[in-house]
Amino acid sequence: MNLAERMIEIPAGEIVLRDEGAKTTWKVEVGAFLLAPCPVTRERYRAVRGEGPASTAGPRTPVTDVSWTDAVRFCNLLSRATGLEPCYSIGDDPDGQDVLCDWRADGYRLPSEAEWEYACRAGTAGVRYGELDEIAWYRGNSGGEVHDVATRAPNAWGLHDMIGNVWEWCWDVYDPRVYGPYRVFRGGSWFDHPRGCRASCRRKSHPAFRVDDLGFRLARSL
Image (tube, rainbow, N blue to C red; front, side, top):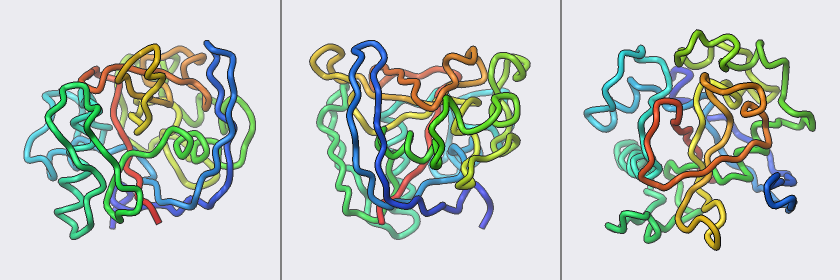
């Protein structure tokens, strides 16, 4: 099994999340779960979907130009293809508000925002889990393009590209009272300045949003 296909077991713990705009913090208990060591690549996305977004980037770069809805549909397709129980029930609401997640299912899913930051930090408490130039592709070293996965140093739990290269969709709605159906994405990208490449940095957009520095990473419940 190659790096893009195996999963890493993340131990249970807790994480304090922070919203810088609202100046609020909240603690979340995180159960043990599985997380992919790198984002879904273009070659894997095409292998499962039969097609993928057009790009001149190489097959081992993270797939980008995928919406949150594209990502959850990919998770279900991969679950069925590998004999696992799909996590998502998906309707036809363009805002994705009818998508439900069965957290007890053993199939593939997006990580929750708390799972994502907890795994990203891997027991560290700083701005990021290592020196930026060593762990991430960002505006200062990317040459203005996405790079192959797992070509920067991983964190202590063996996870690559949690910071930089591409942003990653998470399951959570950002703030439904203010932003309606907008979903969270995390991690910073090849295009971002250092401020965007921090373990705590939160961004959001509509579930149908697609852009060339936003992809996703697979999780599974234990």
